[in-house]
Length: 500
Image (cartoon, rainbow, N blue to C red; front, side):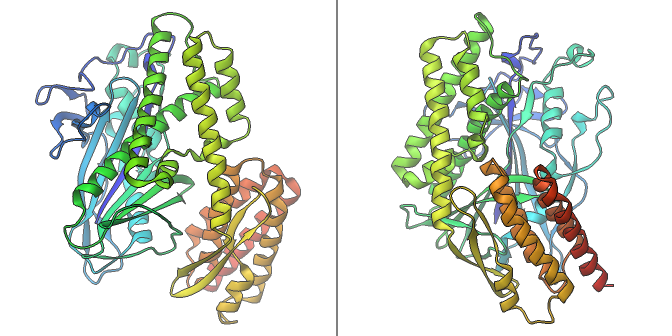
């Protein structure tokens, strides 16, 4: 089973007021194989199976071997097997389009075929493994400590930036970064003929797709406070649909990198970290890049729509955070006031409004889809209910239903009382949240916290991580935040204390 983690990286150095100082080699998007290399990271190679032919795919033909960028601290093992089954790191690659969209992709594969693979366990094992980023350990910026892989996006972006910048610029006190990591992406590719895929605690959306050779699933997950997108491409039958699945994987990967780059640039403009360049060469580069990037995304989306339908196109192009109130307004205000060509301004604003509409439509779609949902966790059936009205929605395990399914001795009475308090407080909190992204985060943290708290052997670290997320979301309301934090601490103390 192949698992690929992508860190999209937005490189805005070409569009900054300061001198770019980015190295001109490798000559992306078509570097010289066998000659070009990225300092401290690795050399350039041909992609063994190639990219996808046609326009907009130049940057997928070659890659930089990124073994020097990401170093793993320990051997990875798939847990829960009688003997140690290793997880092989099959590749570490850097791709770049030569302008702004870079991506780091790391591939993992279980060293031998297992009859069953729990996707939840597999993802957590891989994403929580410890790594270092040697290029980021520059004396000028301080020593970087080992990090969980899923938390290393910023560190990897920094290492990439240092390795692709002139030494003279790195040593200056005002070294401009201009490089930021986007939302991670995970793609799992498997065959039902080889392995039975166990979803674990994942709530997956099965997207309708016109293919007899594979099925497609999607989810948005949170681990260690980081939200990531997950796609599962499950081939039906041995050897069937390999080419189709690979092509779709490349489409999804490229779309994610491109849209996260645009989104990160827009977010930098909204936050005031990047000014829209005024008339001149830099402004022309910036405008041309945005027009081309929007054209690329439309091209990718149209191809997905033509081959696989509207549902996958909408989901692949959707940005969870683009519907944040104030974000859209700040982007529109910035570009309306910008001194750029009217035709470019029109295309950008149309794109922003379209993304906003797509996100809002998807939110309502999820509300309709998830009114009633069953999930299997630890061989017990739980019921999930929608709490709230309109966009004030959270999908969480119903505490009443959990109690009905579990034996009375499974949950101490004092823990049950605190859980009931949390459920009540969350109902009061939801209408006060102004962002769909915040409500989604509360949904995920509540779901994970309740499932873990009602297990026979709850794990303290998972309770603390998800509980912290709930407390953080409640900080906008003092009268809820304090008692919620108290209930979370009490539950953790009671459950961990009862295990000793």
